[in-house]
Length: 441
View 1 (cartoon, rainbow, N blue to C red):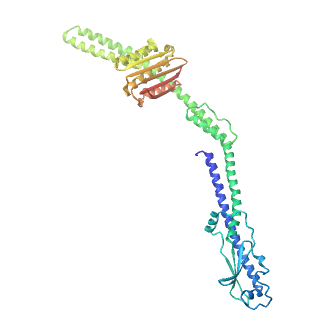
View 2: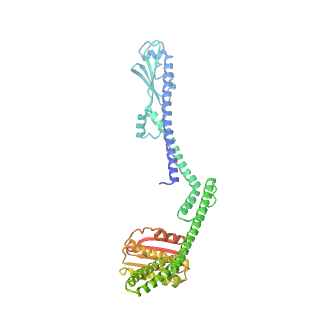
């Protein structure tokens, strides 16, 4: 239970229960203090009343009473001074001869045994109060007033029980009411939290509604401003990335043209001259043959680099034929691996920029499948429709294909796909890996 609202309710309930315990402790203390005060007042008043009746002192201690003997202990007229729940003992030191208790109406329900043990443990029943009685008949008479434990415990239970039931009900009710009120007050927070989660997932289009609570309204407006700024930043980044790839491909195209026009022509002329030299004599022929061989290697390297910079088949034949030749090239280089190409729809209807991006993505996926795995089969499937779906799957074992950088590897694929407004994922599948790309057409 980690939510803010449950924790708040539990803390309010805990505070209420703590208040109940403090209230119960105060009631117990007040009850003990009242019993102690009743015993003191009773002891003093009874001592004063007995001291004012010398006839009673004489009777109590066997002396000669100056008044008739019918004024005995039980008929003493001042016992109305004994407080309820207080008992009084009267007599010589250590030999109380007479005892009388104040009236008290017992409760219908006796306190539980655990409460009695608790009362004894905390000293709820006060100590007895003793007052001397000094007259001409006796000098060692004493009045001792003490609280009846059963009466005091029953009185404390009655007061504490009522208070605890009332306070406990108020604590539980207050916690529930607090939960309802705070839950309603924090309801806008859930909307704001949902907006933050959408921002984390990349959804910058959602906006927060206006709130009635000022603080939440300001927070929602700030969140809207943040979403707007992030959306603008993402759009700017996407546009810059798209422009970057366009400039990159333009530079590659220009570089390929320059290499072909200048470097290629020079190599062709060099090879022709070397052939002519080779036909002119023995030693010269050997040198010319060597020049021709080197020129041929340079021309082949040049063609490979030109193909890497700008696929010639893509410009001359279209995406369909370019992909067919790309896969055929891999079949020729790795005859032990089965390369499959499945095309659906008309790939040649794809725009030039998008076709070039698809070619580069497929080229890099094939390279990663061979470089980072040991596949027996690599399957390429391209579906062209209202949306373009591309999958490149292999059975070379599950792995993490590391990005290479500089426009190649997974990082380059993700950047291209993001710039085109699509999605890319790489997941283990069928004993290997499956790269999936979706792009708007």
